[in-house]
Every structure is written in C-alpha cells, then in structure tokens.
Length: 125
Image 1 (cartoon, one colour):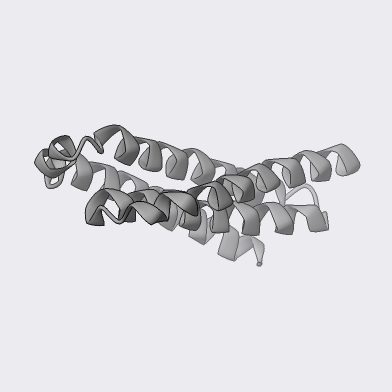
Image 2: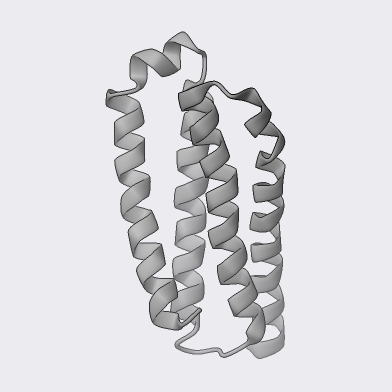
C-alpha cells in the first residue's frame, strides 16, 4: 500500500466514521434502542475512528520512516476496521448474531497493527 493510498484511506474512513456515527445517532436511534444495540454500535464507531487515526499516523510516519512493518500495520488496521467495526455494524442492523463470532478476528488484526507499528518504530527511530 503506498503512502498516498494509506493517507487517502484514512481520510475516507474518518469521514465514514462521522457519517456512520451520525446515521446511528439519528436514523437508527429508535431501532438500536429497541434492540439494546446502541452501545455496540457506538463501540463500532469509536473503534473505527480510533484506528482510522492510527492508520493516519502510519501514513504520516512514512514521511520519516520506511520500514516494512508499517505496511503490515496499515493493512492490519484497515482489515481490523473492516472486520471488527463492520461485523458490529452488521450485527446491529440485521440482528444476525453469529457475526459476533468474527468480531474477535478484527480485534486481533487491530492488535497486530499496533504491534507492527511498535516494531517499526523500535527498529527505525
């Protein structure tokens, strides 16, 4: 993934975080409350935004550091956002509960992203 791609992806995911959060707070509020999924939806939005910021940091760090582990971090954050937040969004909207079983895979990818970022910084700075 190129630095430009990482920065563009972070920008797009940041905008989506805000849009999805607003959609949940307004258009889905009654449904989320009725199904007791408001907290789950908010967790998905928060984790998406936190890890979008981490992805942005990786993209910005690439101005200073070139280490292959930064590519691992970028991919892991992106995949983690898709699986972790995506599975929770889908669970909240559809009620398909088995999707909760794949959420930890996304969480693991997010952890891998942080570990790869740690490693890249440790070895490069």
